[in-house]
Length: 216
Image (cartoon, rainbow, N blue to C red; front, side, top):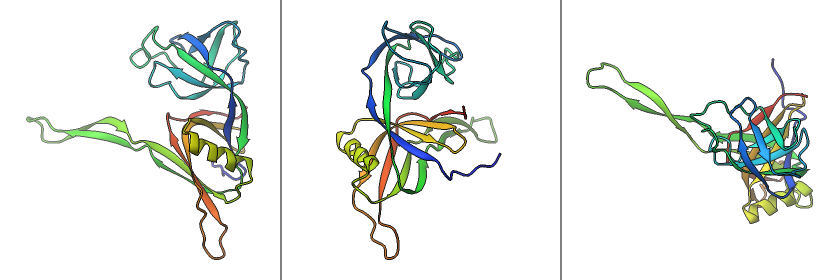
């Protein structure tokens, strides 16, 4: 299927609930997080996860239907114990309470995330081989029309100053959602090009790979 991004919206997490203890996560698909009594998480809530599991920590995930204090982490497969060691995924979750739209976006771009490799050759071999090592740090950049009175601009400026991670949600026209957790930077100096809209740049330095959910 071919699709266009026209009509997509970008929003930044504006407020969070208090951090709640997560005593563990099961090795399952999806992983089931065990929370403290009185967590108040409901199905469909978006949460920031902090976990001892490096592949999971800092991701923004959606809650499935709770069973008492057990919350499914929708779309998160934690069955592979070599990546998600059993009984060691404890941490915290923070519910995202409200979002603020980053409006008047003129263009966007992505950078980084490229897979790196180690090339090697055995003495007795006549050809090199390669194995994947790490991926470069990744980021997104949005050029937005310069208007410091807009709520999204103001929130981006706050994130630029306090250097605290913020969740970012991109909602596609289909209803599918992309979720990021990132440090946000704002270059407050607008572009000044004749006959072009004055714009500033908002940069996202990603803390984890994005989580994507299909259209409801």
